[in-house]
Length: 154
Image 1 (cartoon, rainbow, N blue to C red):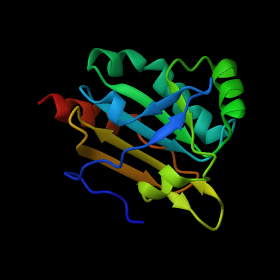
Image 2: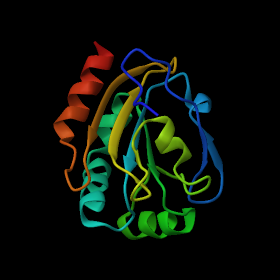
Image 3: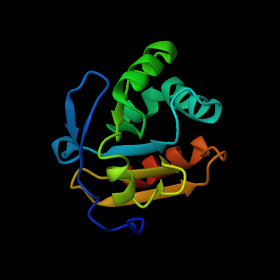
């Protein structure tokens, strides 16, 4: 499936958080949400990226942006990772059906069975306003999040 483009209605989803509670994108409407796909819990690049989000979470909070991280890892692995690193944002499991949400966003690597590094900023009406997709091993530039949030507020 193709990656949604800016201006499209973002694909809705319902995934379990680290405690087994369903989180739906449509349930987060009313305010912006950034959806951050990561390949693997506990991997170096993924941990570095999410620690940067964690360390700068006030920028998202001040802009009213909800952070939702999606991985094809099971919720138990994500819970352990969140506890180890002190992540206070949602970590959502796209484990089963495996990669279904990553496919809807065009970031599932079928050959390797994981999501590549894609980030999507969705406004309060559910419209995609910004996205970036990087190959495995290439971290996203945090400055691009700042610019996307600033553009959303403008």
